[in-house]
Image: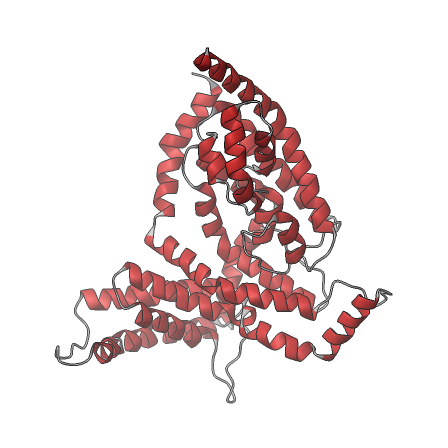
Length: 429
C-alpha cells in the first residue's frame, strides 16, 4: 500500500470518526453558536478601538494623521465607551449566547437558559462592591469562566427538569409566567451551589474564580500561541478537509476561546501602550494562512481561470468571486480537491508554509499583530490591514503568502491540468 493510501486510511479510521463526534457534539455546537451570536458586538467594538488608536506616530507630519491623532486624543473616552460596552464586556454576550443555544439544543426555554447562564457568570465573576459591579472579567479574561458556568447552569436546569424538581403552574397560566416560575428552582440551586463554591475557592486561593480558571488555562493559552500549535492546527484542519470533513469548522470552533482571550490581551496592551503579546488570533488564520479559503486556494482559482482544461476553466470562473471572500467550497468540491492525490501536498503544504512565514513576520515585528476582529468573509488584502489597525505591513505579507501559494500550487495544477486535458481529448475523439 502506498504512503498516500496509508495516510488516508489512518485519517478515515482513526481521526475522522473522533473529529466528526467532536464537531457535532452538543456543547461544542453551543459554544460555537454562542461566539457567533456575540460576533457583531465584537466586530463593531474592535472597529472603534482602531478609531481611538490611530496607526500614526505622534511625530507624524502627515496632515490627516495629525488630525486623526488630535481627534482621538481629545475624544478618547467618548470613542472608547462603545468599545467598553461591546468588546469590553464581550463575555456577557458570549455567556447569554452559549446558554441560549445549549438550552435550545435540549428543547428547554432558550431565553431562560441564556438568563440563567448570565446570572451564573455574574455571581462568580462580578462581585458587587461599594455600589459598583466590576467589569474586570467581562472581557477576554472571563471567556473560560463564562464557558464553564454557562454549560453548568444549563445542565443543572436540564437535570432538575428531568427529575421533576420544578414548580408547575396550571395550564391556564400564561406560558411566559409559567416559564419564569419553572426557572425559580434552577436559579435557587445554581446560587446555592455555584456561589458557595466560588467563595470557598476564593478563600483557599485568594483569587476570584475567573482568576483561578485563567491560572489553570494559562499553560494552554500560552501553548496555543506558538508556531508548533499553529502548524498542528493547520495540519489537522486540512487533512480532515481533504477527507471530506469540514476540518476548519472543527478546529476553529475549538480555538475560538483562545483566540478571543488573545485578541482581548492585545487590545489591553494597545490601550496601555505595551507591546502586543499574541500573534495567533482569528485574523491570523483567516487572512495570512488560508487566503481564499482552506488550502489557500485563491492562487489555484486564478490559475484555473486561464487553464487549457475546459473543466478547470469553468470551475475557476464559478469560484473566483466566492474565493475573494474566503468561500472556496466550489473549487474544493468542483475540482475536486477532496480525495484527489495530486492535490494533497499543495492543499496542506501551502497553508503550512504561509503559517510559518506569517508567524516569523509578526514575531519579528515586521508586521503588526492583530488588534481587531474582522468578518471572516472580508478579502484578505482588506481584512489583514483592518485587523492590524490599518497598517501597511499586513498587505505586503498577504501578497507574499499569495505568491508563495502560487509557487506551491503551480506544478500540481499543471500535472492535474495535463491529466484532465488528456481525458477531455479522449472523450471528444
